Image (tube, rainbow, N blue to C red; front, side, top):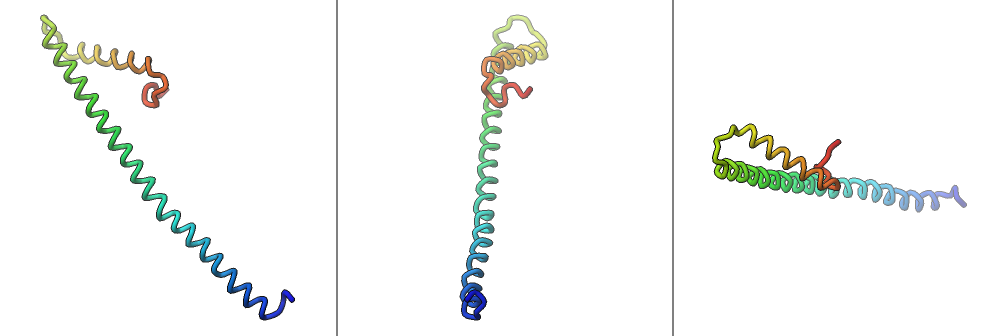
Length: 103
């Protein structure tokens, strides 16, 4: 029964669509998933860059405010060290942040 021409013909007509369907499902999943993953990665990267720019601008504002409020003219390197120390303190307060402590 399993070796008749009729059975082999029916089996081949059933096997070929399943194999082609599996290959097309794999290729379709690849074509849908990777551009979507790449786009979401780009969006996250752009959002992080924008947030970093905002924070850098705020740091510049703090530096200017410190320079204006300080009666003595101090070198900007000491202001930089002050701002960096404040940033490190803020990172220590937020240990759950992914970018806070890369160690």
